[in-house]
Image (cartoon, rainbow, N blue to C red; front, side, top):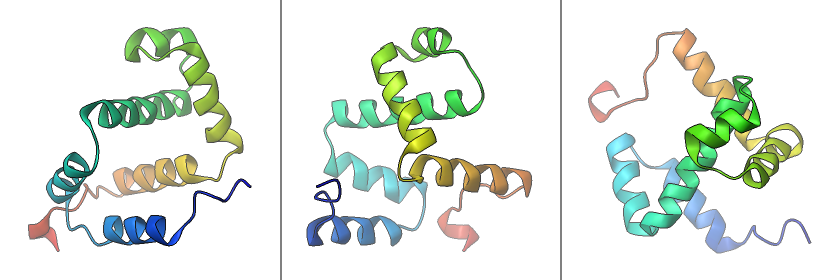
Length: 109
């Protein structure tokens, strides 16, 4: 089943993410949670999603990020036909940027 990844443990992890205060707290949590390779893979996927959204060609994205064209194709599929997570995050960041709102830091709250 496609939704097998949603478990009570996953929901607890998502709840933990939603309660983080700022970028530094999120970085500390991710570093404790993930291996360096997992962090690099996730940041590479996010970079690829942003570049795809910006209209960059797969070959150029591969050169810039080191991601394989197979990985880029998979990310493009999720970006355009997935759960909407990539698209939603990109839209929120674009809206915040247009409004002049940076990522919140603890002192901004």
